[in-house]
Image 1: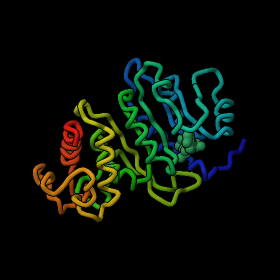
Image 2 (image 1 turned 90 degrees about the horizontal axis):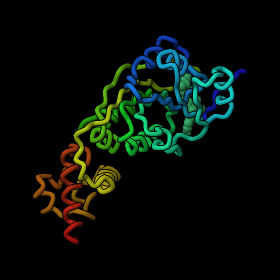
Image 3 (image 1 turned 180 degrees about the vertical axis):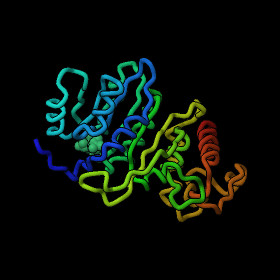
Image 4 (image 1 turned 135 degrees about the horizontal axis):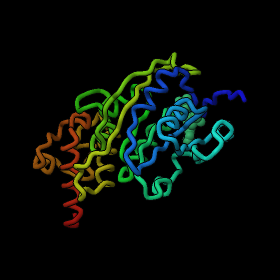
Amino acid sequence: MIHRPRKRFGQNFLQDSVYQQRIANSIHLREGAKCIEIGPGQGAITEHLLKRFGQLEVIEMDRDLVTLLEQKYPGGALHIHQGDVLRMDFQELAQGQRLSIIGNLPYNISSPLLFKLIDALSLVDEMVFMLQKEVVYRITAGPGSKTYGRMSVTAGLWLHSEKLFDVPPGAFFPAPRVMSSVVRLVPRNDVDAGLDRSLFDSIVKAAFAKRRKTIRNALSEWFDEAQLLELGIDPQQRAEQLDIDAYLSLAGSAAASAGRGH
Ligand code: SAM
């Protein structure tokens, strides 16, 4: 069966077997954990993962590709979940096991998917993803750089990220217009359990929603100038100048004020 790549599903199939193998080799699987591949497509990486691990679970939205994979891998080694990964319940998928998650991700859903996975991080040992190079820059960026934003702060708080290698457009069919990079993401184990996650997220979101404004203006719902100064934060700075620790102290202070009934 010939499958015509569908743009709406972000289908750029990885053709180059050297990169297929390299990506599949980049993920670790701990004893008792299971590997899940997001968007297996025609099986470019799947093939190598099955060889390494013997069995694999995959999440694929395109029904035609699910049919193709069922024909290609009969016999039960490949367990296919047909559906939208953004609607999947990872707790249910895990079935009590730890997860190593891998995928050449459809670029149109990479940001919402990363935020969703960060919410499911307590189940995860490791993730290896191919993303647009620019998204990997955003994940790994530090304060002061142009690409530093909400994704950098959220990813930096929850994940150790390591860029592994670039993959050029010519390795795919159809060739995407941009360069891709493979990144390894490992959950950090040093996040304060008392952190109010939704408050932290709201503050970071508000700060970067108005990234050209001063932090005093962007966060006026929570803080006045004196409170910012008390936290050691210059009220004239902009969102992109504050590091993760500054956002953590903002969230901690807002939570304490809320607790006091302010
Ligand atoms: N892994 C294959 C490869 O490397 O050649 C395919 C990668 S292609 C960039 C992305 C894959 O994700 C496609 O197979 C596409 O159908 C699938 N996909 C797109 N959106 C999805 C979604 N929301 N949930 C699950 N799979 C999705």
